[in-house]
Image (spheres, rainbow, N blue to C red):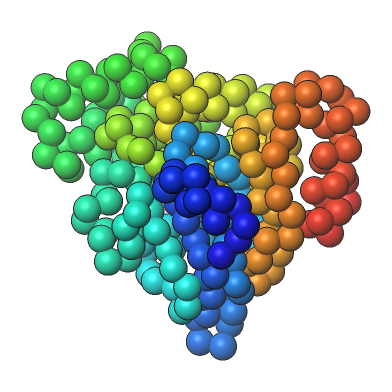
Length: 259
């Protein structure tokens, strides 16, 4: 187990997410090799790595889509692969594409998860409208996905993910399809919402800027997935251009890419 994971447990604070000495292979292909990390409750942590670094495999382990070849995965103290049904309202996921259903209005898309969890229709609609207001989409409640901009669609997707009131939010490249300005605005808004409502968030990205601007901690992964670097950006790192560049270059060097 990593020193960070040990420290979290010794302090009596069970992490929201814990991966302990994880190996994961698919046949002869090793996707994850001896990976250990944790995400504390209320923390925003970024997975940063190049394509093929095993980021999505780790996310799938946390979601319980399959178990590890070796090691231990815990989400809120439970094994997500074995306790999937118990955790289904604990974890919510935002994907690279918004996955809005084109025949449903924005509010109908946002309330869908609640209806699947058998929330009464009136309560589901009320909660959906509340979350649309929180992500500044009230005016778009009755619009269809094709009538929304890319940024608005991702806001709707975020509202849908948060409407079920999960404890953990997993974001998989949610900003990668957006232009720089829209992505930057949405990152700030998402971060504000997550912190305001005390959610735990693990997000995957290949953009260094995304990680620095949003995360409390950045985990840089190599391939097969193993921890190359861990950084905790400060507010000064985000606002001071020189410090931002120093941290950016350090992460880029760990990734083996040009800054």
